[in-house]
Image (cartoon, rainbow, N blue to C red):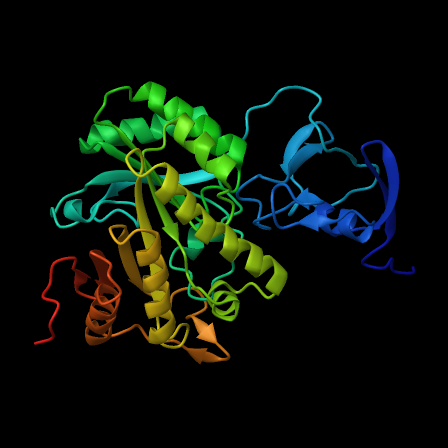
Length: 367
């Protein structure tokens, strides 16, 4: 008996249009090979598929009547795919954690970080548009299996965690929290309704790659009170190395958007949003000279912005860069980075080290 090939041509229907595609591949790939462009940006020309692992559900379509992510769902003979849903459905996303956090994130005010107790509760949204080789939270970034939650379900869980931990701050991080915009906006709206007291703080940590001015406005209107943005670099080459993004055009767009978000928030929400900025340091990824340039640029925007320097260390894939494993920066290196950034005019600098944060008020002169 003749064996059938492991692949064959099948017919699927996209918005009622028949397409001849190869079996055994994801819908996203089938559509791309059929001439439908894939976009790295939500409002680009093409289908927005940011995470590629099925965690964020930004690319979800109606597949044979079921809401599924096209980035990981494989094509089948006769499959019917609709870009628009035939009936209203709540956005979904894999979110986990819902736990107390003693340090918080980039958007957590520095004066809370040394309390010795949990200072906020946090949840972590799956999926990310970046591919950082040293990803510190890769089990979330590449999480494509788990329970998909509605915004309401996630907001209820985080509110319960707040009551359990007796804190005022509620944070969402990732992965990348901003990928699924409808989900995040609804989540914040519901979270605000469940926590109407003036002490409640809603904190979003993000890489800033999708934070257009309109998105920032919408997040603020939904209830966001604090935001932390990781800038990662000032040069595109460095950004590509840190994020694992090989497409220079895409990297340039992401980098520019994150910087513009910091400027926009600083100029338009100075007294209404707490903004913290994160920048990386590891000598194999970014030079001290570039870190200093980043500091000068942030200082030009607002010298009083809180800046957290993250000591990038080997985690996911051991942080392999050109086959070599990166080493975690030493305490002495981070002290040097601290003084370097203070020298740019920044008033509030924190540096992450193996022994906890240093700054913002250690002496400016080296001992």
